[in-house]
Image 1 (cartoon, rainbow, N blue to C red):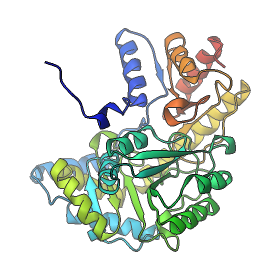
Image 2: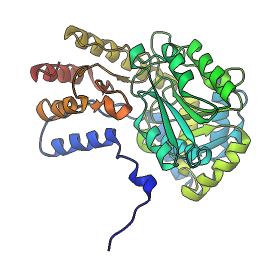
Image 3: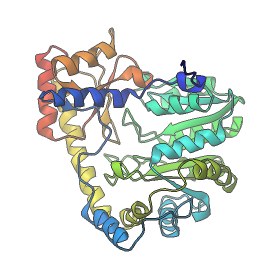
Length: 386
C-alpha cells in the first residue's frame, strides 16, 4: 500500500532544535560526553512549592477533565498577572489554558490563518512559527534583523516594506528565541503603527517575559494604544517556572477569538491536565523568589559566556533576555556544517542559524553551568571552530 499524505504536512520540516537534541542523546547513549547547548530548557528543577501543589491536587482527586478553557482559579490568577502587566483588557473570559505554549500557538494559527493568508515573521524566528503557518496553509513573508544585532527598531523600514493590507498575522517574540533580544518601546510602537495602518492581528509571544537583564523592559504589545483588540498575548509556565515537561500555557485575546479558538481547543486536547493547572496557580502566585534566583543565575552565565567568546574574537550580539545568544560563527560559510562539526568533532550541541532564518549564526543556550559552558568553548577552540 502507498499511503498519501497531506501537502500541508509535507511542506513542514522536522524541528531542527529537536533533531539536534536527538543527535546529542544518541551520542550520549554511545558513552560520549556531550555539552548540550541546543536545548531551550532551564536546567533547574521545578520549584518545590509547585511540585507540592501538584501532589496536593492529586491527593485531592483533581485527576478528571476540567472545563475546556481552564479551571477558574488558574484563569483568575492569569488575569490578575496580565492586569499587573498593564493588560487590563483581559478577564478570565478572554483566556484559554493549553497544554503548553506551543499548543496555544497552534490553536491561534489554526483559528486565524486560512488558505494563503500571509504571516509575517521577524528573523531569526523560532522554528515552529514557520511550521505552524504552513500547517494552517498560510504563506510567509520574513524580515531579517541580523544586520541590526537582532534589534527590531533598525529594521522597521524593512518591516514596513514587507507588510501590507494583505498581511493577516504578524508574530512578535520579545524577549526572543533564538536571539535573546528585547525590542525597544520605539520598535513596539512602530509595530503598532503598522498593525493599525494595515489592520493586522499580532501575536505577542511573551514566554520569556520574566527573564530580562540590565533593566531591559519587555513591552507587552497589548498595552499600547490601538493594540488592545488586535493583540493575542501568549505565555506559559515552561521557561520562567522551569516547568517544561508539565506542558502548561495560555493565550489571551478578544472574546470572539476565544470563542472560535475554543472549538480547536475542545476538539483537539479537550483541556489542559487538571492537577497541572492547580500547580500553575501556585507557580503564578507564589514563586517570585525562585524565578528571580533563576534569572540571576542566567544573567551571570550570560556575562561569563559572552566573555569567553570575546576572548576568542567571536562577535555575539548581546542578549537582553531569555537564555540564548547567537554568535556569528560562519559569516562566509555554512552554519549547518559548522554545527555538524561542533557536535561530531567537539561533542558540543548547538543549533544552526539557518533553522531560524538567519544563516551564518548558531543558537547557543546558556541554560547550563559555568563549568560546562567553559568546557564547550574550550572544545570548540581545540577543534578550530572558533
